[in-house]
Image 1: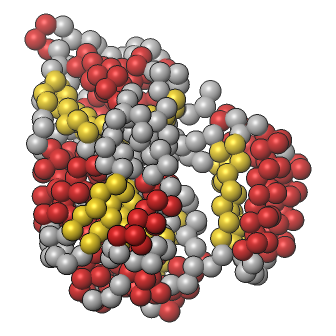
Image 2 (image 1 turned 180 degrees about the vertical axis):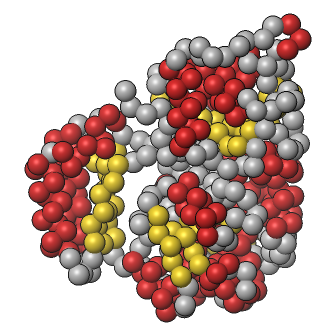
Length: 449
């Protein structure tokens, strides 16, 4: 049986793979494992994004939490980084986010944070999973007054906004900003924070109805935002994903500015200010080679990890780095929050624009993005880690690696959250790498689907 937890919690199609029963069991096992050493009655904070299955899963999970004698605090629709921050601020014992981030509406997920706002290490996730698979054999279910209860808080999103604007206190007067909220959890927090700082805000996709999250909008579909920035003659566009833990941007000419470019801009600014700890940025192996070249030119040290913001965070903690993230827009400012935070990323980027007086297009020239092709191969979920076991696929990968040796690179990896194998090729010729990436992805899909 495949591991229940992926790189970002437990994910699946809601009511099919991620059922209310599994949500209840995760509530029970998670509350038990994360709070079993506590002498007091423990409390778990729970937040959701805007997808329609959130209420169903949240209530099932909180029922599980209460059934093992823990209390739940329900903060409703808030960004993932808000739960991470508020878990620490309110000094509760753990936090849970019910979200499938950038994925379509039919998916949902359950992700745990410990009492310090950090994602759980593999060993704790394994312990939760083992307890579920054992049928909760070691768990004592209380009765009477020992059963937990649920408290509802409606002020949580304001607390998160206040934290963000206090962390990066800037005057955005005179800036016109188009914000794509992805019909997700940032529909209120991002717009209000930018308005409070004085910006003129044009908000799009900020009317979630439970079914439209990430639908042709947000950080995975940038086309409308690009066009709207140009139409509005705006200074910048900001694109969040469904749970607002990632950010991509659009410059005043309608060009996408990705996570690597955003980190390059902010990293150099922090280095000049003396706030880039050890002059180091932590990124993944997916970061563009242009980012590595930028770092060398600017005397910035780069640490690379495997793909997944949890691995970036682990390395940041190990070496006391203050900035890290992914090309996809998960950017972590460890002195301000413990997870990727789209709003903090936006405010830090806007700070550079305000202080430097430069446009985003000018700032993005700090690095040259080398041609990169990324194509997804759809495969059966239980097979996605076994692609190298197929001789035809292994041989095709080897041939590509030999072809691009010295002039690019080939990176193949299974998705941690979706039934996909991702094919990424970097090289000098965009047309060539696009064709080669598609050819290999088609081969993987034909053989493994």
